[in-house]
Image (cartoon, rainbow over all chains, first blue to last red; front, side, top):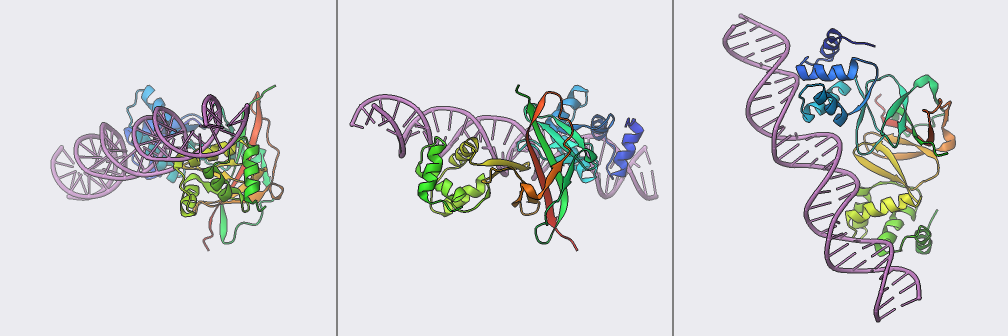
Length: 138
Length: 138
DNA sequence: TTTCTTCTTTAGAAACGTTCTAAAGTGTTG
DNA sequence: CAACACTTTAGAACGTTTCTAAAGAAGAAA
């Protein structure tokens, strides 16, 4: 789960993208350590504070390109922001409503059963479970 | 499941809201027939074409007031729009990715089991399951 | 290397859905 | 009725995301 810069280069090239400075820097922030959940704004801030100058447009471009390449997955939990998850395997999420933090729930730790007959002429694209949590009031 | 205008008046008053012309018209569109899933824009269009002049701000005000009163529930399925559901009982959804349509899945038709231990100090606020579907390609 | 092509980045403008503001309007109470 | 509180509204403002068009960087070929 620790990718060095050669690994990142390879990951990017495999996605048919050019290993530009900005792209490498973003890939490093996203993929070098373990799994992450980021918003565009957060990634932008992190890039800036790590000394890399990247425009917001580039952040969005890359988040979408990585998503199209299957390197990221978009998670819809908040109607005002998009989250991107570096874990692209099927799994679910805890969402902390107060802090806006996302946390993975491995697929095998939660089961969804008896999905009813799908609407006529459709097939499943994904099954997303979001367990929304708040601070316990006791 | 068919509410007449007296029922709507009562529903509104019970929520500690005044039965204004606009509110009654919106309540009629939302609650008079069976369950519905609407976006602000859609409700605005419907109001307009049914001859009622309502500003968008009023649409939002009322959607939020109805939600706060427990008459509506917000469903997060699309990062660019908010959906409001007139079915406030626990249940899940099919979401047609292409058309943006939502369809209820009654709670007892789908089961979510083995929710893992919650993050420290939290409690569940809700468990949302969204089965995203697309047109079947065969 | 040079040149050519294609992809990428960028600032800034624009778009989009939503919220805010403050003034005018309406419902309720006594 | 007066007095008050709530509601609606146009339009401005907001925050996030997308677009535009021009400049810059990477890759391929010779």
